[in-house]
Length: 221
Image 1 (cartoon, rainbow, N blue to C red):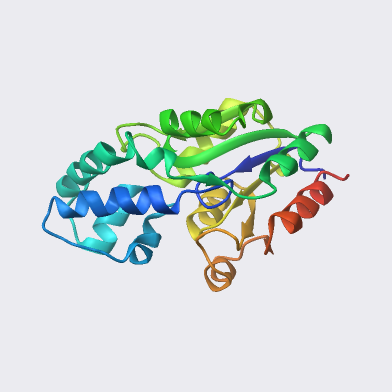
Image 2: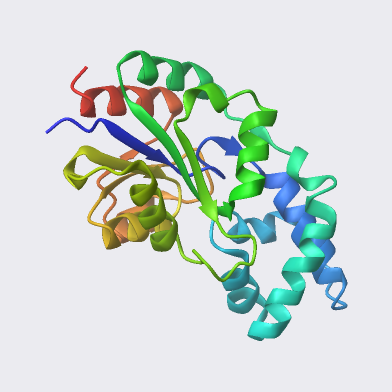
């Protein structure tokens, strides 16, 4: 069956947000007396819900994690959101997919308001029928599975065999599977082959060019 509905993760899949997210985390950690000068050590924060990452990597309590998100946003909303870049070839890929008749939507763990702002900032809004993300309170639609479910409800597609997710981290694959979807894993983001193989990504691609060919094939084009 052709996959006419394509869902995309945002961070690490459409854009490279590495500097903005890690500097925002660095800023938040500093509020707790934690200095982390090596931004690469904060790469695990890129993709998963922030609350989960503060708890997992720095043993924050639920309350501390929510407070840290507030600190994070002090930097992110002013500077970090723009310390970001679209991966080379993404606009061309999206254009080809739209021309092939695909329905495109973003499904991201980033708060939806931020995701809409980023998509607009980079001039990508014309490619997407919907941009779906987490709620700003970080509790509603808190998991990737929640976000993908919300995206499916927003789209209103009945047959989930027509839908394919694309992302760079394990939570993209697991969130898709929880909703009965396959997920293509990309290696140009912040995951790696081992991570994606362990959660049994449907297909794994190395480059934007490979992803373009993969998705056009899934569209039957």
